[in-house]
Image 1 (spheres, rainbow, N blue to C red):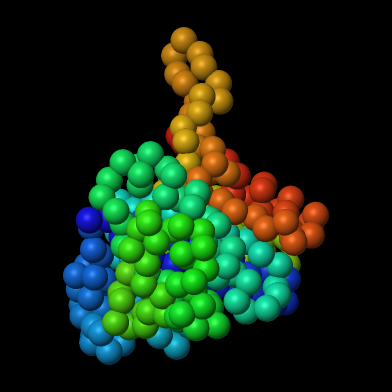
Image 2 (cartoon, rainbow, N blue to C red; image 1 turned 90 degrees about the vertical axis):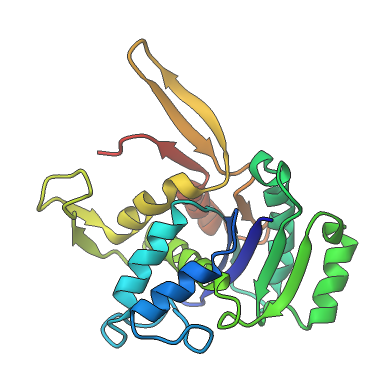
Amino acid sequence: MSFLYFDDSRHQNAGFDLGAFVYCKNDPSHEVAGLLRESGLVPFKDEYKSGRSIRRYPEYRSIRAGLFSFLREARIAVVVTPTAHPYVLGQEALILLQKVLAHPLVRGGDKPSVYFDEGLFPSRKAAEQLAARSELDQLCQIEFEQDSVACPGIQLADLVAHTCSMMLVEQLGHKQKVLMAGPESGYPLGTEVTLGYEMWARLRSQFLGLLEVRDEHEDYTELALDVSSHGLHITRACSNKLRIAAEERFTEAYIGCIH
């Protein structure tokens, strides 16, 4: 059985809300619980929350690194809406879910179980009615209003939503933090990169998309992921500025060396 988890990241000052699905072939609960336990936290009582400061929660540093490592085996998809009524993002997430379920990787497996975090819909009943109207309940088993403490996979979606929202904040020009490239980045030590770029480099290969040949030569072939087909939904209500920023950041993911 495969699994999908959804969580959100809200950025009123930047004018957008972003949600993310994480697709896992196996239940990640054991791995997430192990990371929490190794860092001194109690699984199914404590949880990882990306919005909390590493300075205040230093144990989160190792948890975050472990979650990013786990995400190498997962796939992700994002939805972007302008800041609006809190339940709009949940409704738009169901549209993205249809695209995700149509991806060959997901469609070709068992009927997936899908878990949504709390607060994305007015109620569980209202969410179930929306899913039935879209016939999503025929394609997957959906569980709404899930507690991320009790459903550790949602903590993966929390990390992805937060990370992708930071990329979009930077793309919109609201905030740009410069870092020094790490020893495993492939760049010479001392090379400056932006935080958004570093985050994109970590997740670019994990987006749900279809491989396309960008350029072909005798010695090599450049490949890119078309993310818009299955891994991205930008709502019509987005302003031109927000839409362009989201498209530039997420529509395509280059597969190959980036330095």
